Image (cartoon, rainbow, N blue to C red; front, side, top):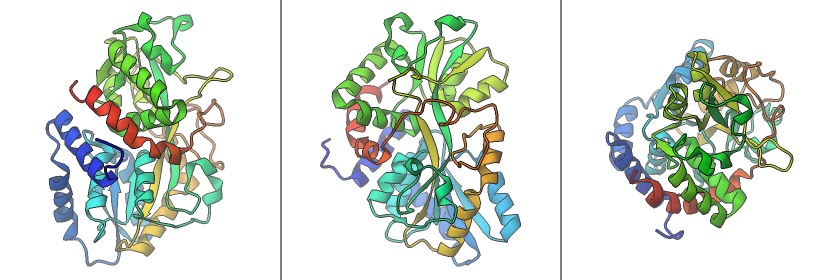
Amino acid sequence: MGSEMSWEKQTAERGKWTKASAGSVMGVVGWASLVILLIGCRFGSDNEAVVYVAMDREFSEPHFLAFEKATGVHIAAKYDTEANKTVGLTAALLAEQARPRCDVFWNNEVLNTIRLEKAGLLHAYVPANAADFPAEFRSPDGAWHGFASRARVLLVNTDLVSEEARPDSIRDLVDRKWEGKCGFAKPLFGTTATHAAVLFSAWGDDDAKAFFTQLKANARMFPGNKQVAVAVGNGQIAFGLTDTDDAMGELRSGSPVAIVYPDQGEGELGTLYIPNTLAILRDCPHLQKAEQLVDYLLQPEIETALAAGPSAQIPLNTKVTAPAQVETPQTKRAMQVDFRAAADKWDAAADFLTPLFLSQ
């Protein structure tokens, strides 16, 4: 599979890969058709916004209900599944581009959103408070807006690893002293795939390929980040790479775990923060309502609530004070990322990682 293959075709192929790994996930074309059938019957109402949502329903739906109560505008939401993450929703948006069904895409990562932008599928819109968010977490022309991020962290079992022996870098995942004792999520979808593309961009192809080859040999792979966090909490592994929301879940459950923000030393890579993103679809059916919803979701109060809630989303709005339970890019050394350059590495990363990890 060369880089000349269109992104649309590669996205469809990755939907098939996801089906192969998840078993119960429908093929992308059938899935997208089902979305059309389920949502298409709702069209004709001007007082609604159709939202495709990769953010977990339990965390996003309360804000849709509050928006409906405040504005009277109905939200018709299509939620992603845990198995196929953003791949299925992205495939649906591509399949529908000639006749868009979706008004707003709430993605729980950024690179697939940028790929949609590069494909010309997004509508530029600049909210009044856009400047309250750091420039690196938003599109310069308003095609997408990053907010409510998660950090890629190491979760450590404190019963198995003493404080002085805790790993402090993602490179510890390939250290032979931790062979079979550490874990990661399959890097073919979700934030782990995003992290992989960022590393291909930051390190270059050769170093990134060497790292992931060593990772396969040294660490245990789990279906997703939540499963990594649970495995650390119950002592299956000593530590693992996961997201802050899943790590916080283990802390709340009383598991003997601690969160380590990796690569914090002088000259080190820094911790990767991955924002949720909001994007309005080009030629969407309900543009005014879509803009109204984006304005609402980018209010400081929304990030404050997401940060204080069980998902512990990390606020990016500079006017929001983060609760003590989370560390922000202002309190930790954050990895400096050119997300557009990382999006350009998505294909190269996937071409290498798919045959390496799909069979596991």
